Length: 150
Image (cartoon, rainbow, N blue to C red; front, side, top):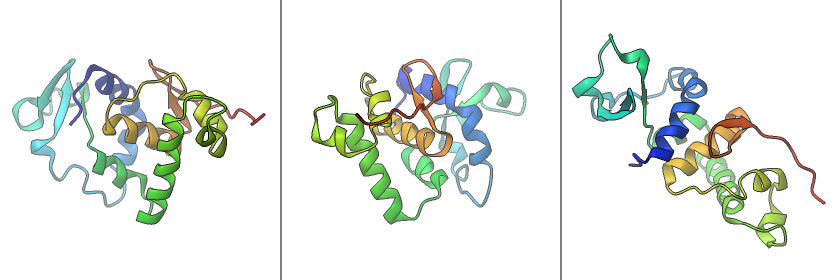
């Protein structure tokens, strides 16, 4: 589980977008709440140890990969295909790279200089791109601007 400063920052900035999806539908997202990690006032804590009704509005969860996958709502085949394309684009670093040219130029362009260091960060970036049309610029989630392929 990623508890890095980067993932905490990414999730903290994403939570306003994620929380509606996390609480909608028939998600079992919080069925394991007692063992989930949350960030409360900048510190990583377990739900059962520190979160209560008095401080819940200041906390956000550090979602795990399977929780983010569930929130996407894709069937398995589509999930794997779309995630594969996204992941390939993330590691294609130059315009003349075959993968970079093969997939979404705009997405590849946005993530060209961003370091993703964990699967949680990668799944969160994928979720935000697919569901919210936003990408991580190293500081915040910003609207993805489509860049035409040259």
